[in-house]
Image 1 (cartoon, one colour):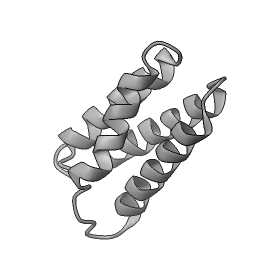
Image 2: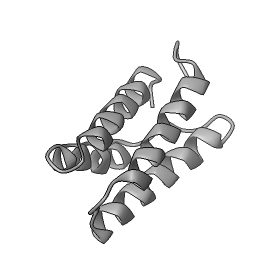
Image 3: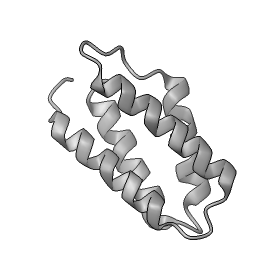
Length: 91
């Protein structure tokens, strides 16, 4: 995982999950998409010698971050930080 501390990635993931739990009025489809994408990424992070997270796995996160800007700015910011860390980690 390049020069990024794996703990930083896990902490960022935890922050996104916490923001998701606090987000009011988060529609079921967005919640499901975000939950599935985070679970997929977490599964890959937890595997020894994990393969990089495919762009297809990050794409929903990026799309959701844009969609959440107006109604859920904290969640959008947490997602963007998480996506940035994944990129720095080469995932």
